[in-house]
Image 1 (spheres, helix red, strand yellow):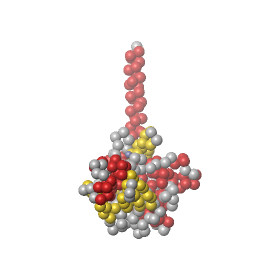
Image 2 (cartoon, protein in one colour):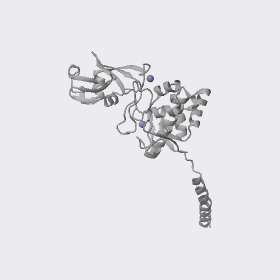
Image 3 (cartoon, helix red, strand yellow):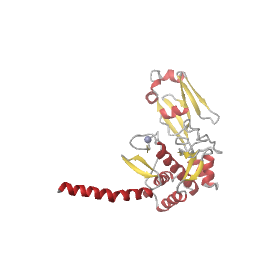
Image 4 (cartoon, protein in one colour):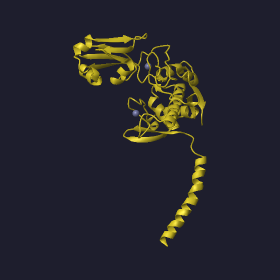
Length: 290
Ligand SMILES: [Zn+2]
Ligand SMILES: [Zn+2]
């Protein structure tokens, strides 16, 4: 008797749930979702929520409405790209480590007027994303690119864009001792500080920033040097001192795609978000996908 009842309930459950499930699928949420690891937990965020959380983190720099809209498009595009292609982690999509290099903040932590403006910037661009050859593009963005953005070796559509005016605000100094250099660059740990200083050469590009260095016979380009030393920027000047090295960073962030510092300057000069976007992503197309 008991088994028979169970069977009845099972059949009942199936006949009731099946039409419900298919009906739900027919009106499925078109907004892609990604997972972000932050504060020890994994948060699931829709592309729209992600855009709002990125704006919340960067609203101090992107304070004009048009630069907020440009950033909303970049962040949403990146979420759509990540949903489509996956990203750098297994258990979650992205986080704020130096490799992912993304900051998010809780929009509820913003003051009411800034929250309203961020929300409006996301809503007014809802579903608008950047595509390359009709596929989602990883529309990376950077805090401040100094004299300009860099070309990305893996994402060929992210090209170098020079700033008409180099940023003189986001300049920071960083010092490293010889032992810190040796632990960051293990290939150099066998040479003495004297050998390192004597047998090293730093090459500079046209804008006066480090393009590569040869350290006791080992050649390192600027980006591998920056990542080995965990520099918070992509443009820098390197010099040896008595105790190690002194590095001046021009700008902050990965140096790819939308330059927030430059976007803000363009917005203040009266440019619209789509003009800002086409300046930083000349190879990408802006389309509304939902
Ligand atoms: Zn990460
Ligand atoms: Zn700047």
